[in-house]
Image 1 (cartoon, protein in one colour):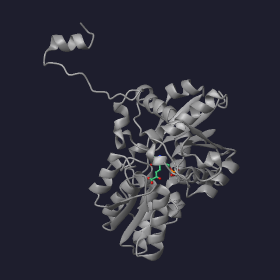
Image 2: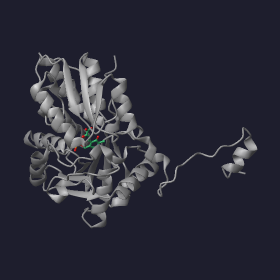
Image 3: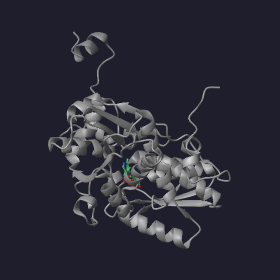
Length: 357
Ligand code: AN7
């Protein structure tokens, strides 16, 4: 039989904190495409730019890599329920993996601030969903308190199993390129993913597989940029709801990753995020959710500042699928709604409308 990708735990069994007694709860996550994006390379003036397309994971975001680990370990410890705070994607993933494991899931989300696709996933997978009158940071405080005091297992990225699973994306990049990129770019919220990639690259470096680690470049939205301001943001605000996070859970881990990799953090405006969201759909052919365009938007800003060396090989992680939050594609740059033209069922008129006649 042809080989099918077996999910990150089986594919990287020896490099994760698991053993033969760990039950493996998988939906076949990981093994996502690393695609070359010449239009983006040209735009930013780099030799090569690749996108690591994490929207191709089973629930449409990178969260599945960490969730297979977190839920497997939770089940191994006898958990009957998992809990998380989420801006949307973590809840979709937790709900799906809990369903696969046959256990319950509870998700706390900021009221009115998660994208419809993500909410529908949590509902579809039968999570108990509570909309909290507060932001993500409040939801995380609540989840931690509940997991400390009640029989529910926390699967946010403060749980190290999540970071372990997510580091596998860096392994895949190295396998595909046969080297480390010069720069690895990604959007940053809690900075769990930023920290996880660096951990993955560092492990590859320590095994002697790569000779250098990439500079880690992380980008936030201007209204929600604690890494840039150097202090938590009380009322984070951005249209990129996935990264609307003011008090990042992996703050210290990410600061050390930046330092060790000679990397940086920056921020971009919502308008820059939406411009790049459109560019990736229209010129590269990859439809991502707005938050996922934040890394590439930051890379462009760095390029305009003269900070992107022309000979560099760059990987940009695009974290979530465009169908998660599709409404942004249906608006013009100035915010007007796009409605496709209606035509009669008549070839001559259709040809005329298409400018073919
Ligand atoms: C598409 O789902 O925090 O810096 O609760 O959904 O590791 O937090 C999502 C984060 C980037 C930021 N892109 O990653 C959640 C959540 C997308 C995301 C991030 C998120 P981290």
